[in-house]
Image (cartoon, rainbow over all chains, first blue to last red; front, side, top):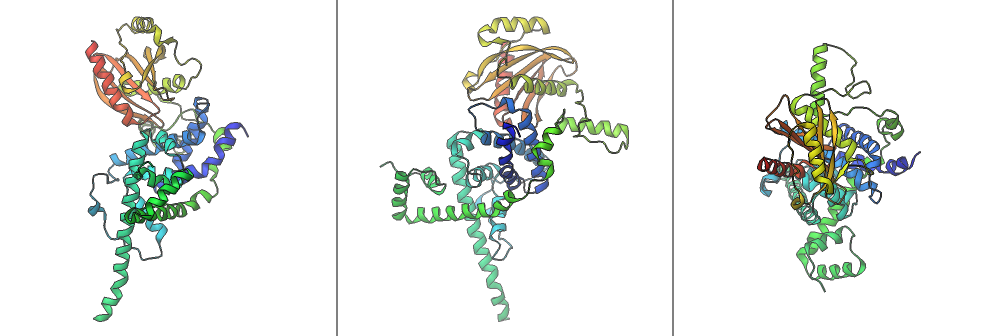
Amino acid sequence: MSDMGRLIEPLIPALRRYARALMGDAASADDLVQDCLERTISRWHQRRDDGDTRAWMFTILHNLAVNRMRQTTRRGRHIELDDADESAMAEPAHQEDGMRETDIMAAVNRLPEDQRSVLLLISVEELSYADAARVLDVPIGTVMSRLARARERLRRLMQDDTAAAAHVAGRPHLRSVQ
Amino acid sequence: MRPILEDDLHAYVDGALDDGRRAEVQAYLESHAESATRVAGYIQQRAALRAALAPIAAEPIPPELSLRHLMEARRPSRSVPWRMAAAAVVLLALGGAGGWSLRGPASEPMMQHGIAGLAQEAAYTYDVYGADQAHPVEFKAADKAQLVDWISSRIQRNISVPDLTTAGYRFMGGRLVATPYGPAGLLMYDNGQGVRLGMLVRPMTIDKTARMVEHTDGGVNGYAWADKGLGYSLVGSTSSDILHPLANEMRRQINDSI
């Protein structure tokens, strides 16, 4: 396979993971990845020689994802959480304990999109702060502040979930008193 | 020692600190219980997130994402909301023409009119010249006067070149390009970090005056508007949030210059 193939192919699993974590469902995520790969192929000559293929492909994928989510927003299926206060988001979780992985993704999905993408690019995809800034087309200071907000908000959401789970766990005891 | 800031705590969580700084942060955390609790929570959260998402990357790649398959099936046209909308209209007109693939190689780019046509031309032009490393422009910024004369005489309208330097974009130059409605001027800008913008300008026959609209062609976003019979579209493979204020600034300068 060509140089292009050798550089792109190993990145596909991570691109799929980022797209799915961002979009929520596998079909629309893979659709985005397909679009991203097609664009990467057709714009390969546009890549800067000194540029990093990984950051460049994440940039293309991220822009496609943002456009897709924006279209969804216009159709009214997305709730903008950026302005919502913390207490409004602290609704109790309904899962029992032992579902931590589902819990953390449910909590991540409650973050505003700009915080979610920073968190995923850095914590999961291990992009450097500078590369994340390139992908998101924002200054590095913005990346840092979004990362801090995302982590703190997620931590609080998880704490609330834990508290709610403890509360739920206490219920059978209350019932037995009847 | 430099004070320990919030950024250091996150770099600590991400393993992005050098040994010296990491030791400093560690010492700080030992004497700051609140920060230590938070950082422990962040580390745990990072691990949980990675564990939750790891299985996705381990899945086999579906055949439609195989690179070989994609390179063989390279499509001449791309799916774009407004182009898809136009295609849907054609489909309705054809009535039950089953088996049509909007994304397949059989779908030819459809000609758009008015401001949508301008947006489409701008996206195509940007794809060609925005990607060109050797000759993105025919007249460089230094020959701006000649370029303006050339475009103005060919489109038979006086044009001006908006200045985006305060926004960090340098004027690169431009060229004359062909559209279904005759010649158009293409002005190019870059920010010195590989981000190029293209501004297409041509006389409008349909939408002589049009409010600014956002358009998107996957990775290429743009804002198009028309004023006093001239249509403009600013396009780039950057986010709409970046482009929108630039388009507003261009429109303001153009209006001031006329």
